[in-house]
Length: 179
Image (cartoon, rainbow, N blue to C red):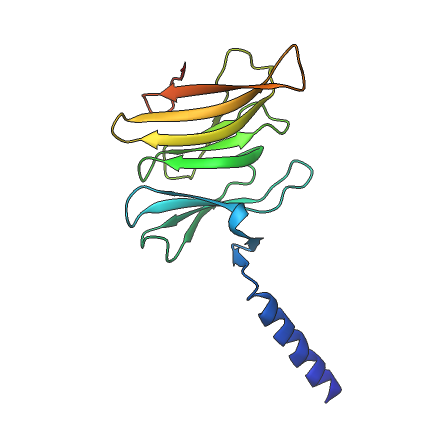
């Protein structure tokens, strides 16, 4: 009887801990700070769910919704495809989008997909690939068909200072210009 009560109490505690405002997708537990949504219409959108960072490793699952975010379906675990720590996500169609990341050992800080998140290509945008670059924000302007990415670049002379740079692309991330 004691063992049954112990098991029951354990199950109740597990159930209560699941009601703490945290949610779990694909085995990754996250709070509001650990996912990035990008809706491309009222019903269709994408979500990047991330785990907590540890030793430059972070679990990352790409998901899709077709009901306005009521439910999300896993597209792919992209933990090994997308390096660094994500800071923003923007999608402009059901096949195209990007993930902007912070620098954490891999110089590519923009990751592009053209197949709905099944494959990702990392790119570095800027004049000097050796400069420490952190992603800040990404957005898509449908009227101009333009992607804007803001980054913080470490000042070469004053290593404690950063300068903000803004890059734009009018061809869905194929080429970039300093704005």
